[in-house]
Image (cartoon, rainbow, N blue to C red; front, side, top):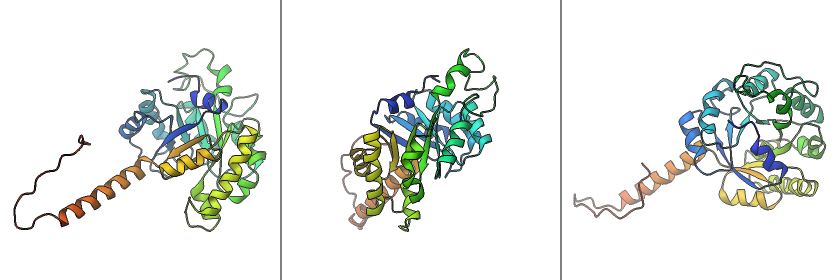
Length: 275
């Protein structure tokens, strides 16, 4: 587990990052995703069966690969924030940040006094069990706090939220934004994309790191082209379901064309097995 936060460093340098999105709560799958080649991986504990208390094995699984890992928190609860940070999370996404006041409280909850209000303890995973002598002097600078914008209200206040001390970047939640706009979860609706592109232009000119998550490779590339700098693609569960449905559809199509008189058809050549 590195004490320097490479994800935050990449954002400050305005590097373009393509990330994965993890929802299955399995340390095995977290380790698999960490080896897939992403620039970073989001551990989602808002819309999954995982909770903040599952972060210990999940962060251990991604640490083996050294992959920058971001935790998408389930709420603004200060106790949950303290637990996640003590377990070693360095970068946090926070859902439904609509106002400057909410952003200010979150920035303070993630940092020790005098800047913030994070509860103090020496013995935890984040400090490598009190073996990092300068942990408490450095951690306020290494923590990365990302405000998620998921409503029209939040989008309108985006640039003010971005200027809050201790907010290190913004993230557009296209699914919730589409719901708030009346488009039923369609993250690729024209109105959603228009608002996202407009904010992307503002953030690019202001040098504000801006992220999102997109369902397809084409939509990831689109987001990067309009000013987003860190974009995740789909999720482990989404990718698995897509592959499962596609494979099943192909099997049924091939099976419907197969001989029905008991004669064997020749097995076609195929690429390496996925097993």
